[in-house]
Amino acid sequence: MSNSKIARCYALALLECCDEAKDHDVVSRQLQGFMTSYNEHDALRTALKSPVVSDDEKSGLLNKLFAKALLTPTTRNFLLVLLDNGRLSDVEAIVEDFQTLLDLRSKKVRAEIISAVALEKTELESIKKETERLTGQEVIVDVRVDESLIGGVVTRIGNVVLDGSVRTDLEVLREKLLA
Image (cartoon, rainbow, N blue to C red; front, side, top):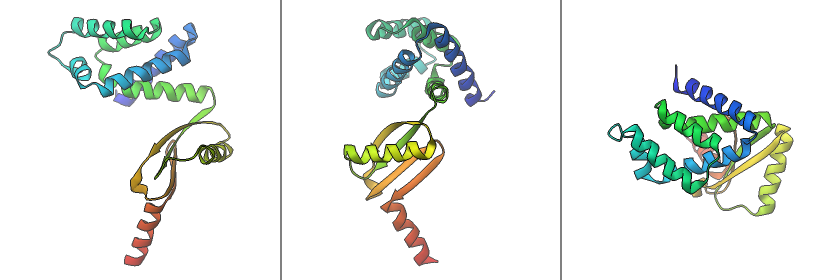
């Protein structure tokens, strides 16, 4: 079974657990927090991935994290199940699939807005409203600055990219001039 199918199976199982406990939003936030720690702390990630570190030691490490973070039983048990099944390295894909399932269920869509400079609140709100009009769904916006765009905005919604960047315009112009 491919990793994407495995991630989907775990995400569906987690969704069912959250349905029983009615703690979808809390679990989602806590898993995002865990992912942030996991990605930002090399020592944590290395220890949890290491075949030299025993499962008991990894479990102890996770339990120390759980005590500090005050995680719900659903989140705590889910991460321990991933550890027990050797799937902790797939946690990022699983969390991503879980969030996608939650968004589908609540008729929300995520959009990544990338601009060359930080956008004003009114500009961001305008882009969000237009994206909601286009998709017919509530839009959750993730904003990022990428100075290499030179100017303009790139909006990603799933696998759809709306590219209004100066960099892309210049690349298109260059290709036309070379043709």
